[in-house]
Length: 170
Image (tube, rainbow, N blue to C red; front, top):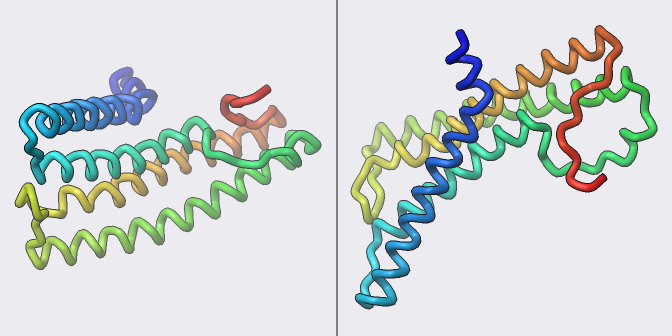
């Protein structure tokens, strides 16, 4: 049980770290190859591109978890805890519906790629592995939105302040 809690608390951080390290190492190798050996590879560019895509989608999930998406919250300062919780719940429900629809359509894209056996130009690896970044990101976002909704409903029910995430500027 403690292991699941640790994974839930840190999953995006670990995934972001792995993909970021992979991106930096691959870019460093490619820069050295280009500058020292006057040679670059197709696979390096592809790995960096697809790693960056995974970083973006996993980062979106992490931002939902921490309520770190960019937002204009001037109005929120003038609202009471109950109305603030209701607005956050509304926003999470809308995003949840968008994520469900996007997950469906992104899985369809993966299915089409799998059916046709699409491969990447440089790596010659099934493109499904890279297209899965989008549904993986949306699935993680859905999970974090469910957690956020439960947290906000609890705050609304208890009459406590809703979780607003860390502030960039205070």
